[in-house]
Length: 269
Image 1 (spheres, rainbow, N blue to C red):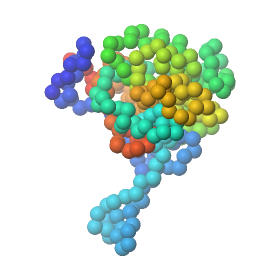
Image 2 (cartoon, rainbow, N blue to C red):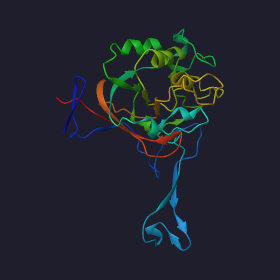
Image 3 (cartoon, rainbow, N blue to C red):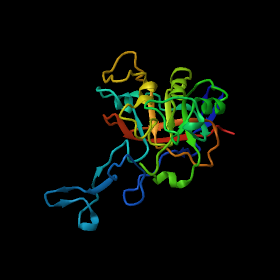
Image 4 (cartoon, one colour):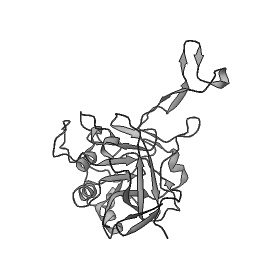
């Protein structure tokens, strides 16, 4: 089956490329903000145990995880407001055009762009200057942006983000540009938060993206409910920068953030 999207043609019979990190409950996992590891345990009900290795008739497991901190996840505006709008309610379009770009974060001391709370010199940031130098063209019909940061070793899939490994984040100038001057509705990044790891709870970039005022936690008609943010994705090095067809897969869970599986299809040759 082939799909024509704007001037792009995609062959859906070709296998897509996954941009999700495999969440291995028995091996290494990525982690953010000191959260508990994602874990599984056999279901127990009366004499039943959901583990064939323990004599059970089948395997049935209870799962404990924090979508925001335990791997690739997609979040809605409900990450910062009281009302629950689940990601699957936002993602009404199963297939969308997306642009993959690669950027190298820079030290905050090398930019005049701002952030709240104020930047420290050693903070690693993605600036508007960096984005606009890479995104030369806003392609017609492209509504999702996928950002790969360098370096991009496979170890990124199991980083323990915290004091010892602080991830990059956007300057406010960069986020305002993305939110107000581009057509991107869905932002996918390979780090755990578009905001600074320790930001005094402001989540200022999240607020800029969804256009929610500081301190506001009530949903308003002016807010950009149609947007999503996907964090802790992983874009393999063999994936070239360019335009792809994105299928952003999310489960039907009534939560502000859910584990997700973004996959991309390359243009037909």
